[in-house]
Length: 144
Image (cartoon, rainbow, N blue to C red; front, side):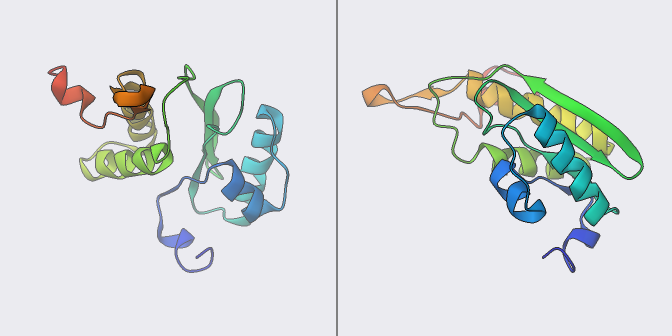
């Protein structure tokens, strides 16, 4: 994957456990996230990496960068009480969709972060107190 797929990708979006596997580093805080992102960029310099921080306990901060792009943050509030399983895949898919629509990488990242954050904030409330990501929140609110 790292030798054949990464060089073909415009954006790679590992979460913290995946980045730990790819770098061999422990990631428990934002400083360690930045160090791991820098290691990913060093190992695979042709790709923009977004290190997703949803596994951090205290924040919902993602960081991104490449060998030609400085390290930047994508911030949003941490939404408690929502089953966020699949949020990373939703984010990555949203990035791909925005890129396919002609947006630049940084704009696509920001739009995707807004999309998944909105899906978490506007979660579907099911019986038994379960809340799930609402992937259709924008259409339900008339936002395009």
